[in-house]
Length: 259
Length: 259
DNA sequence: CGAATAGTGTCTCTCAGACATTATATG
DNA sequence: CATATAATGTCTGAGAGACACTATTCG
Image 1 (tube, rainbow over the protein chains, first blue to last red):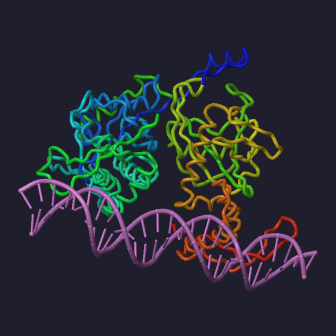
Image 2 (tube, each protein chain N blue to C red; image 1 turned 90 degrees about the vertical axis):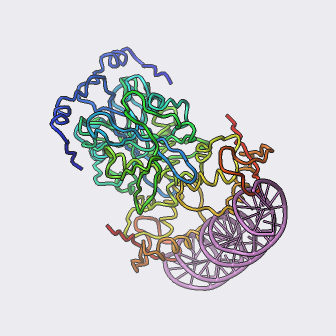
Image 3 (cartoon, rainbow over the protein chains, first blue to last red; image 1 turned 45 degrees about the horizontal axis):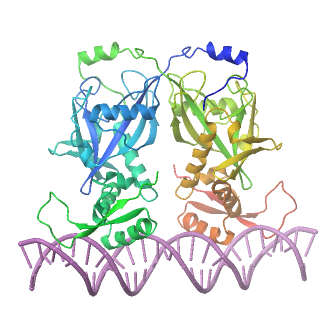
């Protein structure tokens, strides 16, 4: 990938290139970190400690440094604010309206990270974030309402910047990708020990609609087991931690990663 | 959308905010302008007049100014280089690898524009572009080969920067969107006077695969006519300009735009 | 008439939703 | 036993590909 100049003239040109003839916008990488809690879709937000939008909730993110890609910046910022490392992300979109940040001209490249709930358990906010916590996303009409574990309610119009739009876009993207990607598996508590109904709940959390258990079972078998993407771990088990066990124990499965 | 500071303290903060404490990357908007020629998918490229990659073909684009959004920059650049105005675009992705431009750190926001072939007819290159022309995209294995009207052949590895990757991504995106958007109509010579087989050719150009004419006819009727998205213009006509007419004349249709 | 393209009809296969039924656990 | 969840099976209707057939034009 290293570029090789073809002449001395070109070497001179590159050496004396002045990138700063014009004013450049600031560029940030924002991370929309989603997880699933039962059939609830949740997102990680941080309460802003400084101006502007002080005290409002915002999507975590930060400036892209001159020597790192936006992906690297997203990974770094997520780690700094939550301690989570090495999560698969995919790019959502870039937001570039001139007045979207009152401070100065900021262009934000947004990434979607889908993480197991356990990974966000100890997200208490890092450097700049006063407070980091997850909110359940309740879809309502064309929009949504956010509800915290402590029942704090945040409506779309109370979010900082254009972050409500980002969340809308992200939900639409995730729903669209549900059928033809394996994104959903990334929200499972344990990709190597899950039941079909756990996966079904993740699908319900993302899509926001109900799946008939028996039909989901059939589709799961055809799409994942028959193709070898998922294998039976042989075990049959109930889930720990919850109330007294009810009903027939379920087969557990594990994803096959071929990297 | 105008942001209202909540205190004098915040007004002071915003007034004295220094955006330039750190070096900012340059940001460009790149436009992948596609069109259809028969069942060929074509893309508009410009031959680079300056370093780096001098003489190579590249995707048109340019720097995003401090007072315009990336969308506005894309529209402006496309107009400056081709004279095309007011085309619907949608964002593809943002490319941010640190070494993707040998001059300096450049982050590029790529847009897909789908335009009728006639619109690109007089694209001769504007300001910076020495030469602008369209290439047919021949899919081959996982990649593609470009062929100009004059039979000039450009392989993926001869394109400037990471533009081959962008084209790959754009094709995948367009194919994915084909079923659930009306993108294809934008490639028609005339959205208000087209035949089913003309639309079918556009679908074939984008997807790179054959559609059975009779099945396409049925799907077209169900998806567009029965829903009122397109209407019969009543006319029956052959296409001008081409060889002596052959076969039964086709019904012509027009899109209904409800804006 | 033949050739070429437009348009209709039919068969089959796959897939998804609805729902009935059986299987296996707890209490 | 009742209850709850897991898993299997069945029916139906929608949609897509393959393909036979009819319709309308030109020369």
